[in-house]
Image 1: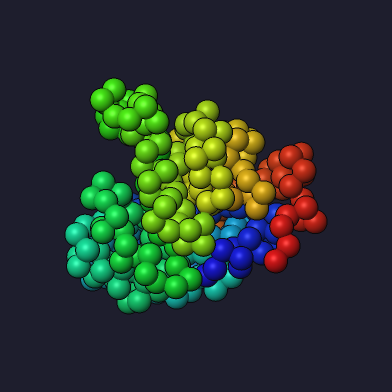
Image 2: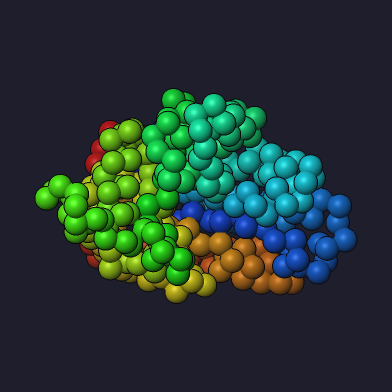
Length: 287
Protein backbone atom coordinates (compact mmCIF):
# COMPACT_ATOMS: atom_id res chain seq x y z
CA UNK A 1 0.00 0.00 0.00
CA UNK A 2 1.21 3.50 -0.77
CA UNK A 3 1.11 6.52 1.51
CA UNK A 4 -1.48 8.13 -0.73
CA UNK A 5 -3.83 5.15 -0.49
CA UNK A 6 -3.46 5.13 3.28
CA UNK A 7 -4.36 8.81 3.45
CA UNK A 8 -7.38 8.16 1.23
CA UNK A 9 -8.63 5.52 3.67
CA UNK A 10 -8.18 7.92 6.60
CA UNK A 11 -10.18 10.53 4.70
CA UNK A 12 -12.90 8.08 3.78
CA UNK A 13 -13.39 6.63 7.26
CA UNK A 14 -12.42 9.66 9.35
CA UNK A 15 -10.38 7.17 11.32
CA UNK A 16 -6.73 6.48 11.98
CA UNK A 17 -7.35 3.37 14.04
CA UNK A 18 -5.07 0.35 13.80
CA UNK A 19 -6.42 -2.85 15.35
CA UNK A 20 -3.75 -5.05 16.88
CA UNK A 21 -4.32 -8.76 16.30
CA UNK A 22 -2.25 -9.88 19.28
CA UNK A 23 -4.18 -13.11 19.43
CA UNK A 24 -3.26 -14.89 22.64
CA UNK A 25 -4.63 -18.44 22.53
CA UNK A 26 -5.09 -18.48 26.29
CA UNK A 27 -7.50 -15.54 26.08
CA UNK A 28 -9.73 -16.82 23.29
CA UNK A 29 -13.45 -17.27 24.08
CA UNK A 30 -14.17 -20.65 25.60
CA UNK A 31 -16.36 -21.81 22.72
CA UNK A 32 -13.40 -21.48 20.34
CA UNK A 33 -10.85 -23.23 22.53
CA UNK A 34 -11.58 -26.67 21.12
CA UNK A 35 -11.51 -25.56 17.49
CA UNK A 36 -8.45 -26.74 15.52
CA UNK A 37 -8.48 -23.38 13.75
CA UNK A 38 -9.29 -21.24 16.78
CA UNK A 39 -6.86 -18.41 16.02
CA UNK A 40 -7.87 -17.91 12.42
CA UNK A 41 -11.58 -18.26 13.27
CA UNK A 42 -11.16 -15.61 15.96
CA UNK A 43 -9.15 -13.29 13.71
CA UNK A 44 -11.59 -13.52 10.81
CA UNK A 45 -14.50 -12.66 13.08
CA UNK A 46 -12.62 -9.69 14.54
CA UNK A 47 -11.66 -8.44 11.07
CA UNK A 48 -15.22 -8.73 9.76
CA UNK A 49 -16.52 -6.82 12.78
CA UNK A 50 -13.94 -4.01 12.90
CA UNK A 51 -12.98 -3.32 9.29
CA UNK A 52 -15.51 -0.48 8.84
CA UNK A 53 -13.88 1.47 11.68
CA UNK A 54 -10.13 1.04 11.15
CA UNK A 55 -7.59 1.62 8.41
CA UNK A 56 -4.93 -0.86 9.50
CA UNK A 57 -4.26 -4.17 11.24
CA UNK A 58 -1.06 -4.91 13.17
CA UNK A 59 -0.04 -8.49 13.82
CA UNK A 60 2.40 -9.00 16.67
CA UNK A 61 4.28 -11.94 15.20
CA UNK A 62 5.36 -13.31 18.60
CA UNK A 63 1.86 -14.60 19.28
CA UNK A 64 2.05 -16.65 16.07
CA UNK A 65 5.70 -17.66 15.98
CA UNK A 66 5.37 -19.18 19.45
CA UNK A 67 2.83 -21.66 18.04
CA UNK A 68 5.24 -23.13 15.50
CA UNK A 69 4.14 -24.10 12.00
CA UNK A 70 0.45 -23.81 12.85
CA UNK A 71 1.02 -20.27 14.08
CA UNK A 72 2.82 -19.26 10.90
CA UNK A 73 -0.01 -20.74 8.85
CA UNK A 74 -2.56 -18.77 10.90
CA UNK A 75 -0.56 -15.59 10.35
CA UNK A 76 -0.42 -16.17 6.59
CA UNK A 77 -4.13 -16.88 6.40
CA UNK A 78 -4.95 -13.84 8.52
CA UNK A 79 -2.96 -11.50 6.28
CA UNK A 80 -4.61 -12.98 3.20
CA UNK A 81 -8.04 -12.37 4.74
CA UNK A 82 -7.48 -8.69 5.57
CA UNK A 83 -8.99 -6.44 2.87
CA UNK A 84 -6.51 -4.74 0.55
CA UNK A 85 -7.98 -1.42 1.65
CA UNK A 86 -6.31 -1.86 5.06
CA UNK A 87 -2.60 -1.45 5.78
CA UNK A 88 -1.11 -4.65 7.21
CA UNK A 89 1.75 -4.37 9.69
CA UNK A 90 4.07 -7.14 10.85
CA UNK A 91 5.06 -6.10 14.34
CA UNK A 92 8.22 -8.20 14.20
CA UNK A 93 10.88 -5.72 15.39
CA UNK A 94 13.55 -7.19 13.14
CA UNK A 95 16.97 -5.76 12.26
CA UNK A 96 20.30 -7.48 11.70
CA UNK A 97 23.32 -7.35 9.39
CA UNK A 98 22.39 -6.66 5.80
CA UNK A 99 22.16 -10.16 4.34
CA UNK A 100 20.10 -11.34 7.33
CA UNK A 101 17.76 -8.36 7.14
CA UNK A 102 17.30 -9.12 3.45
CA UNK A 103 15.92 -12.53 4.43
CA UNK A 104 13.62 -10.96 7.02
CA UNK A 105 12.38 -8.53 4.37
CA UNK A 106 11.73 -11.41 1.98
CA UNK A 107 9.79 -13.25 4.69
CA UNK A 108 7.49 -10.39 5.63
CA UNK A 109 7.17 -8.59 2.30
CA UNK A 110 7.11 -11.55 -0.11
CA UNK A 111 6.37 -14.86 1.61
CA UNK A 112 3.75 -13.22 3.84
CA UNK A 113 2.92 -10.04 1.92
CA UNK A 114 2.60 -7.48 4.70
CA UNK A 115 2.56 -3.80 3.76
CA UNK A 116 4.85 -2.81 6.62
CA UNK A 117 7.18 -4.15 9.28
CA UNK A 118 8.56 -2.76 12.53
CA UNK A 119 12.36 -2.73 12.84
CA UNK A 120 14.95 -1.89 15.49
CA UNK A 121 17.53 0.70 14.38
CA UNK A 122 20.30 -0.17 16.85
CA UNK A 123 22.58 -1.82 14.25
CA UNK A 124 22.43 1.14 11.88
CA UNK A 125 21.54 1.86 8.28
CA UNK A 126 22.79 -1.35 6.69
CA UNK A 127 20.44 -3.35 8.94
CA UNK A 128 17.42 -1.39 7.70
CA UNK A 129 18.36 -0.72 4.08
CA UNK A 130 17.09 -4.10 2.73
CA UNK A 131 13.57 -3.30 3.92
CA UNK A 132 13.65 0.13 2.30
CA UNK A 133 14.51 -1.34 -1.09
CA UNK A 134 10.95 -2.64 -1.53
CA UNK A 135 8.46 -0.51 -3.46
CA UNK A 136 5.13 0.43 -1.85
CA UNK A 137 6.18 -1.00 1.51
CA UNK A 138 6.75 0.75 4.83
CA UNK A 139 9.60 0.27 7.27
CA UNK A 140 8.48 1.34 10.74
CA UNK A 141 11.43 2.24 12.95
CA UNK A 142 11.26 2.05 16.74
CA UNK A 143 11.61 5.68 17.76
CA UNK A 144 10.42 6.24 21.32
CA UNK A 145 8.68 3.33 22.99
CA UNK A 146 6.21 3.42 25.88
CA UNK A 147 7.73 0.76 28.12
CA UNK A 148 9.56 1.67 31.33
CA UNK A 149 12.82 0.29 29.95
CA UNK A 150 12.94 3.02 27.30
CA UNK A 151 14.64 5.15 29.95
CA UNK A 152 17.63 2.80 29.91
CA UNK A 153 18.81 3.99 26.50
CA UNK A 154 16.29 5.99 24.46
CA UNK A 155 16.06 8.90 26.90
CA UNK A 156 19.79 9.15 27.61
CA UNK A 157 21.43 12.52 27.02
CA UNK A 158 24.15 12.40 24.42
CA UNK A 159 27.73 12.96 25.52
CA UNK A 160 28.84 16.56 26.17
CA UNK A 161 31.89 15.77 24.02
CA UNK A 162 29.76 15.78 20.85
CA UNK A 163 29.37 18.78 18.58
CA UNK A 164 27.52 21.85 19.78
CA UNK A 165 24.65 20.94 17.47
CA UNK A 166 24.07 17.55 19.13
CA UNK A 167 25.12 18.33 22.69
CA UNK A 168 22.30 17.82 25.16
CA UNK A 169 20.07 15.92 22.78
CA UNK A 170 18.51 12.65 23.79
CA UNK A 171 19.46 9.46 22.01
CA UNK A 172 15.99 8.86 20.56
CA UNK A 173 16.04 12.34 18.97
CA UNK A 174 19.29 11.54 17.21
CA UNK A 175 17.88 8.18 16.07
CA UNK A 176 14.79 9.86 14.59
CA UNK A 177 16.75 12.55 12.77
CA UNK A 178 19.40 10.20 11.39
CA UNK A 179 17.03 7.42 10.38
CA UNK A 180 14.74 9.85 8.56
CA UNK A 181 17.57 10.54 6.10
CA UNK A 182 17.66 6.87 5.04
CA UNK A 183 14.26 6.96 3.42
CA UNK A 184 11.28 9.24 2.82
CA UNK A 185 7.78 9.70 4.28
CA UNK A 186 6.67 7.38 1.49
CA UNK A 187 8.52 4.38 2.92
CA UNK A 188 9.40 5.23 6.52
CA UNK A 189 7.24 5.45 9.63
CA UNK A 190 8.19 5.63 13.29
CA UNK A 191 6.88 3.96 16.45
CA UNK A 192 6.14 6.50 19.18
CA UNK A 193 4.49 5.36 22.40
CA UNK A 194 1.24 7.05 23.41
CA UNK A 195 2.20 7.16 27.08
CA UNK A 196 4.78 9.77 26.13
CA UNK A 197 2.35 12.13 24.41
CA UNK A 198 4.17 15.13 25.89
CA UNK A 199 7.14 14.29 23.65
CA UNK A 200 5.07 14.22 20.46
CA UNK A 201 5.30 17.94 19.76
CA UNK A 202 9.08 17.75 19.88
CA UNK A 203 9.09 14.62 17.74
CA UNK A 204 6.95 16.36 15.14
CA UNK A 205 9.56 19.13 14.92
CA UNK A 206 12.14 16.47 13.97
CA UNK A 207 10.00 14.37 11.60
CA UNK A 208 7.09 16.58 10.51
CA UNK A 209 5.99 14.56 7.47
CA UNK A 210 6.27 10.93 8.54
CA UNK A 211 3.46 8.73 9.80
CA UNK A 212 3.67 7.71 13.45
CA UNK A 213 2.51 4.31 14.66
CA UNK A 214 1.32 4.96 18.19
CA UNK A 215 0.77 2.04 20.60
CA UNK A 216 -0.19 2.51 24.22
CA UNK A 217 -3.75 3.81 23.85
CA UNK A 218 -6.25 1.66 25.72
CA UNK A 219 -5.02 -0.72 28.41
CA UNK A 220 -1.67 1.11 28.66
CA UNK A 221 -3.40 4.38 29.51
CA UNK A 222 -2.34 6.67 26.65
CA UNK A 223 -4.58 9.64 25.83
CA UNK A 224 -6.05 9.59 22.33
CA UNK A 225 -6.85 13.29 22.60
CA UNK A 226 -3.25 14.21 23.44
CA UNK A 227 -1.83 11.92 20.78
CA UNK A 228 -4.04 13.57 18.17
CA UNK A 229 -3.40 17.12 19.33
CA UNK A 230 0.38 16.85 19.49
CA UNK A 231 1.09 14.10 16.98
CA UNK A 232 -1.03 15.00 13.96
CA UNK A 233 0.27 16.69 10.83
CA UNK A 234 -1.48 18.07 7.76
CA UNK A 235 -2.31 14.55 6.53
CA UNK A 236 -3.20 13.35 10.06
CA UNK A 237 0.01 11.27 9.98
CA UNK A 238 -1.08 8.90 12.73
CA UNK A 239 -1.93 5.25 13.13
CA UNK A 240 -3.13 4.72 16.68
CA UNK A 241 -3.04 1.08 17.69
CA UNK A 242 -5.40 -0.61 20.12
CA UNK A 243 -5.11 -4.34 20.65
CA UNK A 244 -6.47 -5.98 23.80
CA UNK A 245 -8.98 -3.20 24.43
CA UNK A 246 -10.71 -4.15 21.17
CA UNK A 247 -10.11 -7.82 20.41
CA UNK A 248 -10.70 -9.01 23.98
CA UNK A 249 -13.52 -6.58 24.76
CA UNK A 250 -15.83 -9.56 25.16
CA UNK A 251 -15.18 -13.15 26.13
CA UNK A 252 -18.38 -14.83 25.07
CA UNK A 253 -19.88 -15.97 21.81
CA UNK A 254 -20.65 -12.32 20.95
CA UNK A 255 -16.96 -11.34 21.20
CA UNK A 256 -16.89 -9.94 17.67
CA UNK A 257 -19.89 -7.71 18.27
CA UNK A 258 -18.26 -6.42 21.46
CA UNK A 259 -15.06 -5.69 19.52
CA UNK A 260 -17.05 -3.79 16.91
CA UNK A 261 -18.61 -1.59 19.59
CA UNK A 262 -15.22 -0.58 20.99
CA UNK A 263 -13.70 -0.05 17.52
CA UNK A 264 -16.61 2.16 16.57
CA UNK A 265 -16.17 4.17 19.77
CA UNK A 266 -12.55 4.83 18.81
CA UNK A 267 -13.60 5.84 15.30
CA UNK A 268 -16.26 8.25 16.58
CA UNK A 269 -13.80 9.78 19.04
CA UNK A 270 -11.19 10.15 16.30
CA UNK A 271 -13.66 11.81 13.96
CA UNK A 272 -14.59 14.25 16.71
CA UNK A 273 -10.97 15.21 17.38
CA UNK A 274 -10.30 15.69 13.69
CA UNK A 275 -13.27 18.02 13.43
CA UNK A 276 -12.25 19.96 16.55
CA UNK A 277 -8.75 20.41 15.17
CA UNK A 278 -10.05 21.47 11.78
CA UNK A 279 -8.84 18.31 10.10
CA UNK A 280 -11.99 17.26 8.30
CA UNK A 281 -12.16 15.41 5.03
CA UNK A 282 -12.40 18.53 2.88
CA UNK A 283 -9.35 20.06 4.57
CA UNK A 284 -7.03 17.10 4.12
CA UNK A 285 -4.46 17.33 1.37
CA UNK A 286 -5.89 16.29 -1.98
CA UNK A 287 -3.82 14.14 -4.32
